[in-house]
Length: 457
Image 1 (cartoon, rainbow, N blue to C red):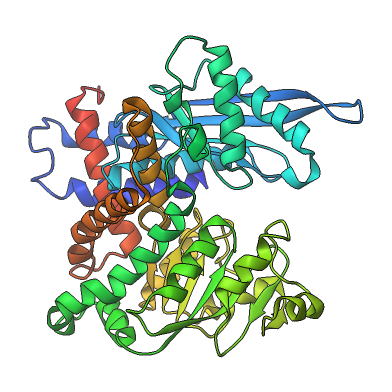
Image 2 (cartoon, rainbow, N blue to C red; image 1 turned 180 degrees about the horizontal axis):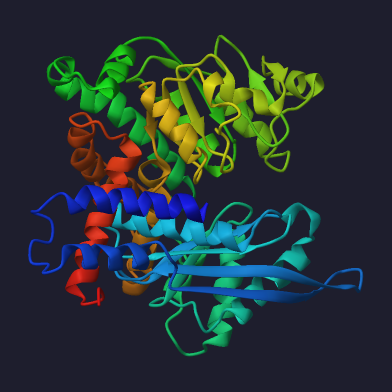
């Protein structure tokens, strides 16, 4: 992953080096760009600890945990804490890097950070998870805080864990401001309305804006373009479409519900999947009914014929990993990283891929699919709703003035639309894929700030 990270940075800097209007005051451009490459391709700090946790059965375990802090030129480090058995140091470094670029792209005044605890949360009791969460705060108490590094939920964690963690932070740092120390908290505990749904809503909005709003306003311009991505977009505009959603957690289920309720695009969701199963119905799935089922099944989709019958849901049960290669027009990836890779990239049928998860498409697969004209709305653009509303939550906590849910969604859509309006004209006018366009904009903004702060030398 870190090799891909360095490649992303270098390709973006190479594109900017050829642009003489970018940082024209530099006296030695090659030396300055070499400095930028070194700064942006490596993290500022990586913190690692083994949490000592006594379990309910009397035994004691030592749990690996991490906090990576990539770059804080734009503001305090910001990023989630992942509870998952595959968490490792390289993963959190890479995700912290992506957070830096994501915040820079959307003009959110944060840097990039990421945390992780190497556990399967389903294997621990609520009491044990509470202790693990509090221990994490104690072990990393010196490096997190409202103006240092602001964690949030990620895979396997949620508002419950953020509430526990903020309470521990308040205890450790008694008498100091604490509301902004964590975001993604429950509303009653200083969280923001709309935070849980923000990422999924943002994921669907980026797709809808690209395929409906933007095309509707620029159809004639796109029709005259030889750009392969413009041709793909126009080929799908204003016709019946099929969609599949991989992952049915906070992101996938919300994005699916947004699609189900959207009257602007003629599409139907024919497949969804989770960690256990893929459900398929060529006539379209009943998304509200599936969401209701997950509320009483610890978040799992129906996985047996009896489950489907009890829930009144019509669907065919398929193997879990079959979803990504189904013959659909739109594929939403809202599960884990590396879901589309060298082994399956040539089997992908979708013409638009929306990345709700972080890094679900490998660099090799991204390059191959982009050459085929597949439109990939990358994670850095599509799934920024969570960090954007986290920023609103951080502001609300500092001001102790709280927005209505309607205000939160209005501000979120305005922020994401501003980014889309900046990126899409260039995307449809040059040969770069959308991901590379986003990276170039992010690196340009970061490089400018780093230069102005005198950190190149």
